[in-house]
Image (cartoon, rainbow, N blue to C red; front, side, top):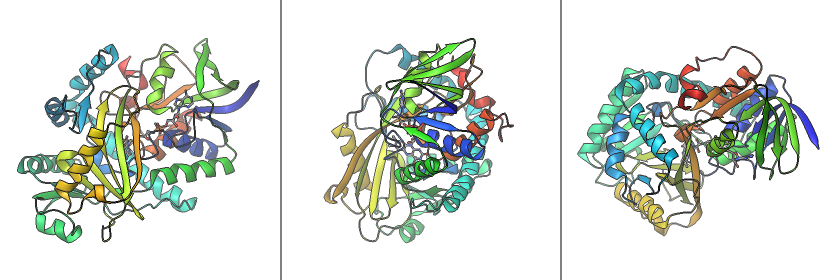
Length: 417
Ligand SMILES: Cc1cc2nc3c(=O)[nH]c(=O)nc-3n(C[C@H](O)[C@H](O)[C@H](O)COP(=O)(O)OP(=O)(O)OC[C@H]3O[C@@H](n4cnc5c(N)ncnc54)[C@H](O)[C@@H]3O)c2cc1C
């Protein structure tokens, strides 16, 4: 059976759903095809941060020096599973090439502007559509327990300040006032007031409900097996249940965008980077302030009656197993920074997700090279939630022939081919 729609979106994560929302607002008819359930990919159990202060891309001189130190330690925040993979070797080579000061300085303004625009769109969508997703704007506090990490934090703060971001270094005494449960080992911190947080699964689920009310068709449990192309155009998407034709196709399948693109002869350069979260019952008195445990790179997010610890970046392919050692490392990091034992709190969920990571830490948003009707919206790495709404809006602008709000040249999906 062949079904026809204006726009067909592959993938029902935060990017696919936000794209559907803005396409529907622009008057397009939309179908989303999802291989499992909406919002169950990387968009489900992540930390839920919306963070203009995270506008320094993952590929940076700091990440490179730390990455080399952490590389093969199975309990470190960044881990590469030893295996032979030409794609991985190429990705690491390009990551290294992007990790220099001049590339970082070029990347910060676009990430900052996209993050800020997205934050305003979150305000608009959540209020306008009455989404109940625990949206809070209290900033993010990073804690440091070593002088070395504090110095690195001061350098990061000064770089962000140069680009106009509202971050400040604060002392241990002020931190105790904000978060009374911090351990006495904390020597200082960095507070970024512009940041916000929410429950990502509730946001994506709520917005998916809205787009259905607005007329989108969401087809679940129906993986796209391939995209058929001819004459520089995608003609149809073949799924398990049938064939979908559309005027425009949007590839928003997160980490899985790469294998789908490969079948069209495209290379997006995206690697899956696994992370974990452990959600526990929120201890009494824990404030409504997300924390980053600086040296350990563990994010702590209060979500109503829950507290979520999220972290690690593991390059181990599409393997979704939960590595107990690495989950244990997240929980023991918490004990170094905070005065409670997370392993004693009732665990509500253990989760693993695959971040879609490009080597330069920038997302890929734009027309696919060689195809006049295929938009790529993927590769958001650690910022898919943060950049979800603005990406959705850009996809709708591209699809409808409007001028995008931002210059997308640094996000060109063909830059790694
Ligand atoms: C531990 C952790 C913490 C994080 N914390 C944050 C944070 O605080 N803030 C932030 O901004 N980001 C965070 N991220 C990153 C964020 O989760 C991702 O960037 C974001 O979810 C990517 O969204 P997406 O829609 O591109 O991908 P996904 O959410 O993975 O969605 C892709 C969808 O495509 C579907 N799909 C795949 N293949 C096919 C196919 N063949 N056919 C049809 N459908 C298909 C999948 O099932 C999936 O539902 C975190 C990630 C992790 C792992």
